[in-house]
Image 1: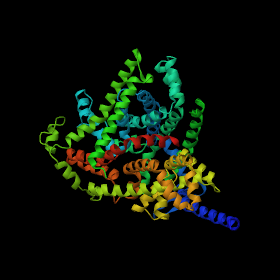
Image 2: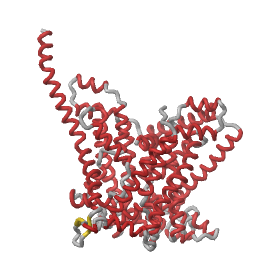
Image 3: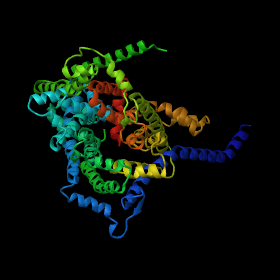
Image 4: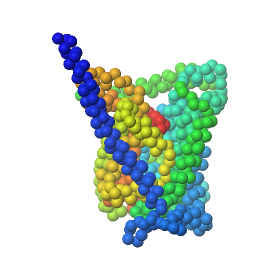
Length: 316
Length: 315
């Protein structure tokens, strides 16, 4: 009897296996279909369309037509023409955007690294400080910028202190130079938190044995930070450096929220956003986006490769 | 079912124990014992961080304090405690409407935010979970290609694809100006969430699944009855982080849903109007707007902080 059952089972096995495989294939297709379709449409399709759009011109009736002949690169020529013109805001846009690279990579990141080390070393109140550093990441940017501008502005407590010291706080967000400084200070003030959270998480993975042997050898804190902590958290540091580089293209709301009247502080992102928001003549911002992607992508990918060469890959 | 008071007491007891544990570690762990100059350095750093904390908390405290003052008092007594304590600013903030926000009150904006951020979170977390599970655990043709393309799309910065996206949403998908359009943009399964869940599923033991298969369970049953409960921790963490991200998102609702502003979009216009009318009412609006996020953060701070750091770096 048992043998019969076994025989029946063995003859059914290939069929059952086929049925099982078919069911698994259906499962895979069902589970992936939406995500793949969404990706094809919203990433591949959108970026492909972006390339096409940058070789088109906008017609008065709202349609787009292909550029041809001498006018084929017209949208890109417009970018170069503006770079060479002193009167346009294009140069200030580039400088304002590049300034965020300096602010993110050479101001915010080093300060955050320093703060993170002390929090990681469980200084008094480290848990509380971590929560404080996390808050800017969860509060909407519009609220953060509003609170900052009110506090520093003419009616705010800091603004009144500045007035008493002879600084006219009413004009802080109205001229290019002071508005730029106020935006950069805001970015450091609000940006440290995010970096600190990621860096402390990276540092917390450093094995205890390594730190204990440092302690036993009597390594001073400074050398421990420089020779142990930095190399062992290099992947996190380099990732944050790359994020900082990308801020040249990604920062767009801060200048608009803080200094809406000073459009010379606006970045590449702000300009693309407002050029697109009208919904008309999308060819120009598309060309601008494509142009900066072509410049930015190899630089950022190259920088990533270069940063990875600084310290060897460490697994622990 | 445990009462709310009991849960609260339990939470505080746990918090107190954690603090005690941290203090014990700080005082007795050989790694964290400091002497001489190092001790001075740590004290100095403590002072610097306290100053930073004050710089961060003081504006919020100042705004909270002034939200309870009548408008007439604010100009005369900006720094002092409210002399005429009032809730009118909060009541007015709830009912205030303006043409710039399509005559929507903050409550209506809040509802819209809950709808978009809530549904957007549910959809995107589900699609990410499904995609990550299948790519991590099933061997099929194109699996490595999918993974490589996703990584590529996350690493290579694409600047300004917004114009093309807008054209696509308007002319191809016809989802411009709809709630569904907004949610559709959020709903992609391949992003940072995918990577976090992928690494979780990759390390997940396959034993339970094999046992379920022997018992005759199909792939859908396994996914919904075994995998999702096992991945509850990371899924909840990702959901909270995603919810906060969508709650604060400005760009997508501002572009695709201008007629139904969410909080992040509407507040900008409300603030511009209120700045001219009444500062205390503006402060009350700020308090109302950040309260839900702060409550969520207070309830899940540990989960959020632990998983944001992991999620932020796995890519």
